Structures are given as C-alpha cells and as structure tokens.
Amino acid sequence: MSETPAVSRGLMAAVVFMGGLIVVGTTVLLFMVAHRLTHPRAPVNVAATPSAIQSTAPATITLAEPEGTTIRQIVPVPGGVAALLSGGGPDRVVVWTPTTGQATTALRLAH
Image 1: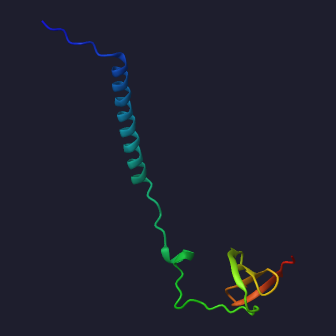
Image 2 (image 1 turned 90 degrees about the horizontal axis):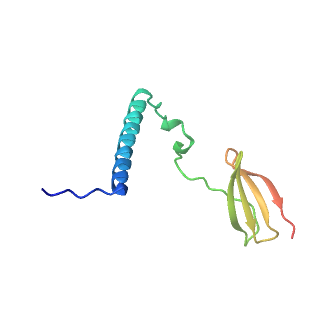
Image 3 (image 1 turned 90 degrees about the vertical axis):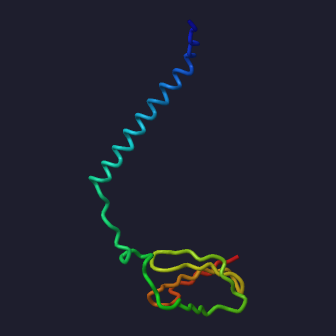
C-alpha cells in the first residue's frame, strides 16, 4: 500500500478561503440581480437635460475690446460666462449673458 502525501495546512487554508470567496461572491451577485429586477430605475428623459439643448447655429460674440486683446480663460458663472481678457490695456474680466447676447459686467484689474 502506498500512502498519500499529507496536504500542507497552508494549501488547505487557501483552498477553503477561495471556496468561501466564491460562495460569498455568488451570493452578492444573485442579491444584486434580484434587487435590480425588483427596483428598476426611472427612465431618463434626454430631451429635458441641459446637455441635449440643440442650436441651429453657433452664436457669434463680438466684444468691443481694443486690438491685441486675447482671451486667457473662460469660466461658466451663474447666469452667464466670465472671460479673462489680457492685452490691449489692463487685464479685465467680462461677464457675458447668453440670453441677452451682451457683456453685462466688465471688471478692470489694476497692475
């Protein structure tokens, strides 16, 4: 008769641990599937989201600024867009309102 070699304790512990992970993972997966089937999400109305607003043509903005003026940065602000302008004089911030198509505020930055 031949004897079978003894299985090391570390290998046995790894097998038991991985088997437990499989059981736990399968249980969580089944729970998540059942939960999503019983609690469906409401459909999203794409036409109502702001990103779905479509325009027929891009707007053209003309600011009465001196020659040599460059736009350094554009940042959305409540009610419009703020643009940091430099060149053609001191640096300045201009707030443009899309609904009126006008620059509503101009802030000149002193050096």
